[in-house]
Amino acid sequence: MTENTTTTRAGFAAIIGAPNAGKSTLVNRMVGAKVSIVTQKVQTTRFPVRGVALSGNAQIILVDTPGIFSPRRRLDRAMVRSAWAGSEEAEVTVHLVDVQAELADRARNATPAEHRAVQDVQTIIEALKESGRKVILALNKIDGIKRDTLLGVAKDFFDTGVYTDVFMISAETGAGVDDLMAKLVEAMPEGPWLYPEDQTADLPARLLAAEITREKIYLRVHEELPYAATVETTSFEERADGSARIEQTIYVERDGQRAIVLGKGGQVLKWIGQASREELQDILDRKVHLFLHVKVKENWAEERGLFSDMGLDFDV
Image (cartoon, rainbow, N blue to C red; front, side):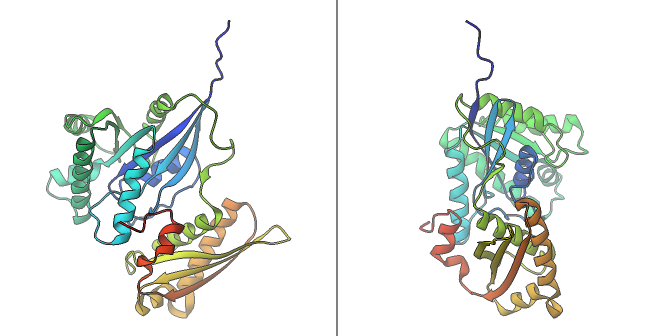
């Protein structure tokens, strides 16, 4: 009897790590399409985003989780819990570490953000030790670092006892990512694919549209506006001519933040709307009519409805 060489595989691979380790960049790289927002601000992924990557006969559902850090408020706690839940439910977990931050911290010239990231990495390692779970380590942002230096860092991490394998990658350039992908394929159980071949993400269009606009806000006003904004798609209407009419509300916590998002003469909001509309047209492959409104809602981050919309647990 001849061996069946077309056996399909499918399963989940969670990507965990400290904020700004490059998780969204890695997921987008593996999927080959944009499924998760990427900005220069840390902690922009607020809920697990599933990207569908194909490699040979395997379908890997990559779960881009929120960064794991020391939470201070309810939304923070919900995001961290969501990240760990995404890991626990997956066939395999990849712990992505920013090796540039690690080396800067060891050289005592790390920025405050890099130092916090290194502390968050230690928190993750301790939690993995307590759980007894083994995960794959991926040292990210290896560009320009000598191999001997990378091997030294890799050994230090491997000696913690929580990793089965170590990969050195650059999510930005793609270096080493194919090797990591091959390892994930091995970990996927045999079975039918979970999504159609042409689907790259498991994210409702309304939520995707809100995430794209939120990304544009951070790209434009990342220095003036902290994490005090969220976007809600209030209307998503399929029109007879094949276009989509989308209405969104941008919520901020104070009047001063509303002024920042609007900009002088409404120019900032106009830029955000145009950039978001153009990307949505590319992703949705149709003409998009996008209408943005900015409202002040002081306690938007404490509303139960927001959490349920993002698939987060409010009661944390």
